[in-house]
Length: 610
Image (tube, rainbow, N blue to C red; front, side, top):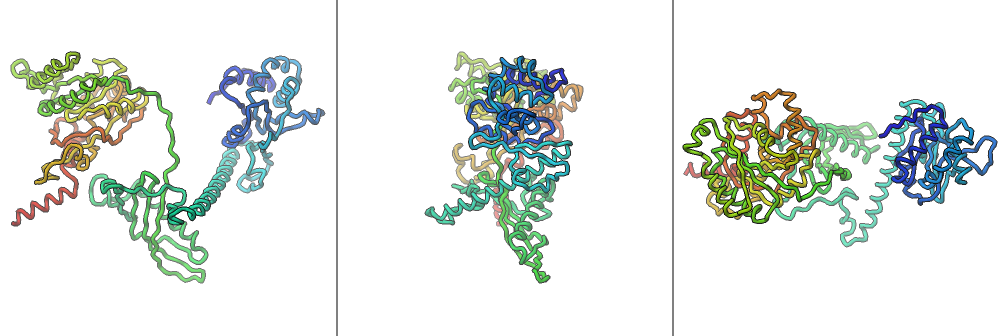
């Protein structure tokens, strides 16, 4: 919203300056201009719909008023009710504005403007243009918006005079109710029309999905696409994030269940009154599932106390189905990004991870170097103090450096630099501080792990989902379950099939994409807050830095293009308790699914008993 001050309190001069300003700053951008006073309530969507039905021509549209002692055919648009000016009138008016200011005497700015347009352009204010009429409503002193029900009020684009802010809010509430009622009527009419038309289809009435007008339920093609139902009661839910069999219903989940039960009872009363009146008594069973094509579905078994017209009461069990549909998809404007951006891949490596480098380099060579992808790789060797002292006699990373030299020999135009760091606590933030200082501010980083299988599909998503000064990208990779547990004596499937036997590891934040400038900005705010407290730095990851010290969007989606083979990670107890605990849980959850673990335990018990 722009606020412009003209520096003059004379009404006519203010209007003169306003018309000049509109032309100079917006004359080439808009087809229509709408002027209104601040003591007028305006239904903006109706004004927008009004001008969308107008052809571009000279038009001065509003509530027409007669000049005092003037010609009946010459009218001006009353400023209190707002009026629409076409761009063509604004352009033609410019050469005459000074003459109007000097020659036309008036106290009211709307009269002055109307007289100027009539005298020099030859156009008078109109309330109707072809099939479009400008509706306005004059608000009386004691008018109650909540009780106003006239057709003139309901159709109004503007209401005048509104003397105080409270009345403005009451008007907005009333017009919102009118629009909501109108929308509900249109929905009902469309539902009836869909139902009538469905009779003519091959499936007949059964072909219309429930609720009418909402997408039909998702139909899975394989058993892996089946959407699970969650079971709940009024106190507990039987699908918990922590993986426990049941947990207390609280927070947004409790509010959701309470709302859906109240809605169910309300809908039953609307259907059966006045014969029966229900009161909520008990939820016997509750089921819900999220269908991405339509919304959240619910099935409730309710035990209700029903009261008849004669005063009798009895208990009735009812099963109801409800749907909370998805709202309209919102398109969020995003800055332009390109897939041509160079990605700087950083691979931190500890001595415990050295054995996995061979597979990483093979994948990197095949998917990046052979494909000539626009990316660079840098190794970060993390030495503990003991290994750092013996590096000249026995370098623990000598084998890795030799493998890098072989890659550089095979690809003559490729260089893979490395950085050496000495620390016994390899904190992500400390490591990133070193890397950040050695690269330009416009560098797009991809922090990888030694188990990451780099491919062009993911690198493009890294480029598209990481937006400088707007968004950072923390993908959730897919982790294969332990083949020894889930397959046991069976043959391990190919890599193309093992996506079915694994999980998205939400415990790990080792892989991320972000611009160096965004990290530096967040890190600067963090430094001012914690004053480089080493203990705090060791307890945080890069993800925490962006969450706590940045206003950027932190995008953390599941990423099917980022797949890792099973491995048991070495958890460093020197890191913070939270980071260490997440690492341990990641190892435990990565063994197998609950059903596969249960089967393995059952088979082991059977073997022990025999």
